Length: 155
Image (cartoon, rainbow, N blue to C red; front, side):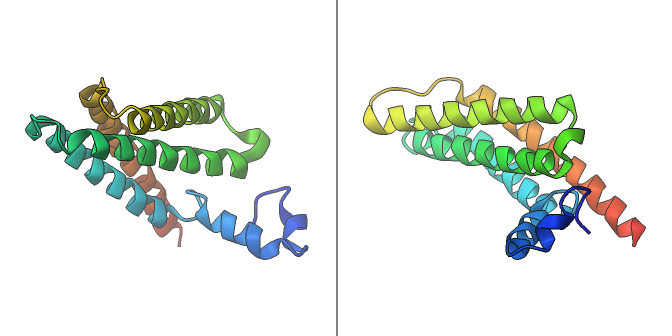
């Protein structure tokens, strides 16, 4: 059942689109987001290992830039779906998280573009970013596992 305020959309020609978007909302489909967040957590762990063991930085920068952009874009998608679903009931935390995620995605895209247009320039703060992202996806995985557990116990 859609949240309050969305019923009228299900009666229009956009019903399938709205139903598809609702199916992606973390609260409505926690299993999907558990999987996505665990994949991001594993990828972040792999990024940490790559940073530690790729001393020559041959593979690391391109992998880091792709990873950084992808993980922040996934974060934006997840939070944006939550904010969209809750509409005016969205918490300040959710809106702040969306703004931070959007900014970091923008910064990752700019860094990625600069690296592609100026290949000799080094990328700084890889280790710090990888550690923070690993911790963040550990938290996100735990949070979506809690949603999944709650959904399973309600059935």
